Length: 535
Image (cartoon, rainbow, N blue to C red; front, top):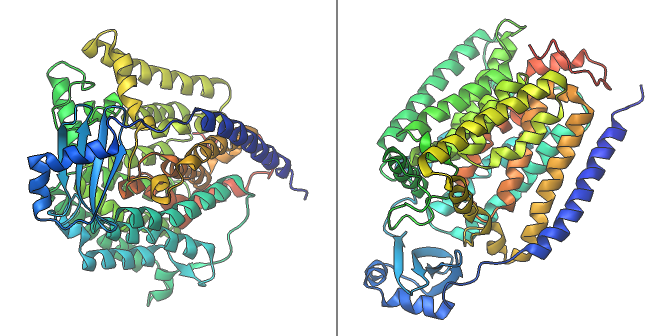
């Protein structure tokens, strides 16, 4: 049978390349690096003359100093021991030091020191491989698992304050997984090569009941470890302090934008729901929800042909989320990134219920901006009432959010929020892939490529709406877009990996059995909406 989907794939790729070229030219022409608030030499002199900086440097060894603009009002001065950052200082336009950070005096950058322990990292890594690797060894899925596990190296390097090496070590894994997910979502629908999970091969008994019992016990133990480490964590990340202060400001009847306490620099750069939905220790619960979402997506819906094999795949997918070392560290910091991961996992489960998925995606977008990039991907496969329902849900959630901003902050509240959030798109940072490589000029090209990817995915979903019935493909293209956003951003931290771990678990490491069986019964060139699958 002739592959009628090939011309459609070609059209999507061409559309993406055209948008990449045009956007690359426009973004390169508009690209501007932040202007220094004060000349670098002046900022360094002001930092050295500050008593607080002198006190921070007293117990640190440094042999290099650098200055880089954060925005038009702040200059960052960093003191290094070769590639290892020791102290960071922010200097304002009046040559006053407004913040000092002593990185060398803390055992870990943030979170619970237990989560960084070699024994725990090794144990989690082994468990991650056990639930993701398959036999025979020569399978792409094993390479995917190793690529995901490669992020342990950036975590360890960052723990020891090797900033640039950490960023450079993360680059290959991010690029590989972005490309693999894009191919998984946009490439031809092919049957995976025969394989057998490593756990199945290691089991002494052929039956799956014992393995499922073992997986459930292991999942419970890992979840308990998550809770213990998350609750006992002594060091929160700066985002946690920012959203906590923003939530407090909201309680007192004011928007956080422009009302952050001294010492929390640009803590008001997040959408309003980051502050309105703040709850202590929510990151721990969110990690468990993300694992549950991966389990449901990989195992399929209960009562619709779920088998022992699919149940086992779901448990392995959930364990892969919790055994991913960066997720446990991220949950222990109290940051909002794990909360976003749980929201995206729920969006994936609701994907075939467009109104509910669109509403959840809107909440995620107003919580953290990146999910808005998935809106055209969701809408592309919809037609008629389903499209109207999804658009209505997006509008309803956004209206409620904007009403909240206006009620609390007045008529100028939305403008204040937009101005504060815009800092994310214009900031300078030493914690950037592009500054680490010294090729800041190439960043607009990467941003254009992400826009091209979104267009290619949207066109493909519009041409073949039936693809939206396959959770694996949906998770893959979503992960590819989100990883692309991370690569093209002005700032990157391994905490952001939590966004995509549930999506990777479902798309590459544990492709859902139920969706594959349902799609196998459809013609290859189907353009129907598959109403039975939307129920």
